[in-house]
Amino acid sequence: MENIQNLLIIVNSGIDKPYNQYASYVVAFMSKHIAKIENVTLYYGPYGVNMSKKGMLATLKLTDDLKELIASQLDGVTKDALPDNLELMARFVKDKLGINIVSCATFNVIDGVSQNLEDTSQMEDFIMPVKLPLAAQELIGADKILYF
Image: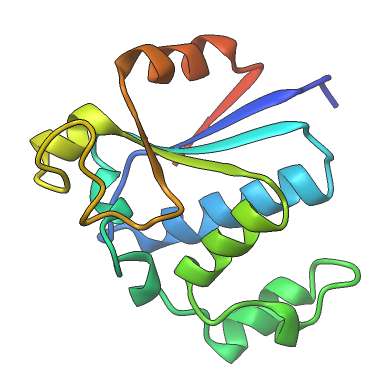
């Protein structure tokens, strides 16, 4: 395996592609928890920023069957330990594993999620909007970029 210290996971899809949403959080979890990658950032790009809107991730449920399927593949993880929706999963990976979750502030404005670059009133509180220079820094500084 490559020596990856900075992993960037770009989510450039919305609610219309729920599998991309699920996969991005599972990969973020495994990258930090199993692969022990130091810096993992999940970045909502131009076509994904709508997912940063309050309540959007919560609409993507983790059913008992899905939890069982995921847990059966991960040593030491039980289905009861998994959250009920992706909002709760996002909060877990951010708070417990230190995964950064950001969105493109420019496209937040363009897509109507925010009124201006600093506006976070309609966004989930665990997603940080980043302006173009910081977004570019994340892209340029990544050892590996995955795209969902």
